[in-house]
Length: 371
Image 1 (cartoon, rainbow, N blue to C red):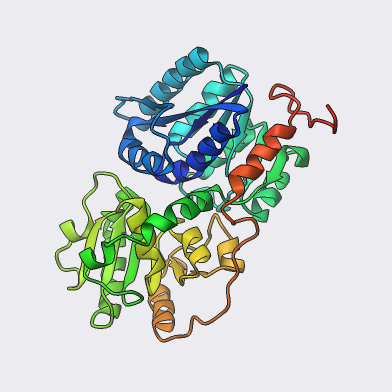
Image 2 (cartoon, rainbow, N blue to C red):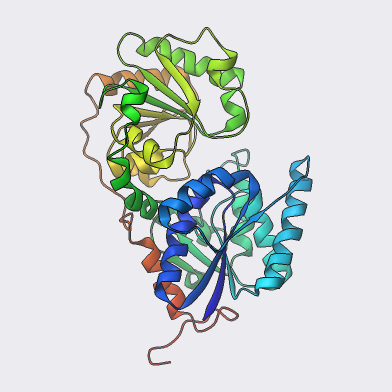
């Protein structure tokens, strides 16, 4: 039985690795273990419980006071875990510093590495996580991509095509697994809103949510919508103050809080009239659920959500986002959208099919039929 260590350093990463971890264990051919930092303990407990994965999870505690010391501690602790568990393959689930540490530890021990959402690129050196994404993919021996742009980006950066496998978006496997539970959520009642009669604003950067620029954007959007629909603003974790805490002048009717439990979040996103986000947060879910999405960025890691999905890039100018929101609320969002290829909730099975075909994780040569 092959031993696989999966790592995730964020909630988004959890949503990728947990359905795969469950499928690996269910196959009976793999001993799958999961490592995550203590900073994601709440998300880990919530999502792993939904997936029925209460056991086989190692929480790595770090106490560093700077990003560098935290990463150094993670490399050291993950290295110890790898020595103890002896994995045949280390799979990296996101672009967090924790997952970069997992890749560094595995590379230092000459263990094969797989990147589970490889090739995602903003195309801007100043984009959050861009350098980490490139370093993780450069260290990887196997690269699993969620959309065709990932393949193009990796090949352009010099990766070998035979090491790249287009399998789809693993996060949609989590969505498919949890959506039944989300349908019974009473989150709309708790927020005092009705289906398709509210707007969701998502701040994907915990620090950014408390910054003056984001507060001003939220206030601008809120004032534009005021009197039409309630606005629910959610900040993706962290301990930073929410806009509602530091800017009491925000429009009436705007509710601010941290991201709710995943089933509640899915219910809120599914039944929103529109989603406005400052990052990748919510883009893939919006496209699969066919909810209009406005991203206040000039680029996206997931161009498929723009090319065939419901996502529109409004750029950094908040007036453009307000104008697009006005068009959506005015009923001009009737353009047909498609779900990207292989975003079907069956991605974990395709990843396992690839692993089953590999002759050995040390050489990564494909098995021939009959071997």
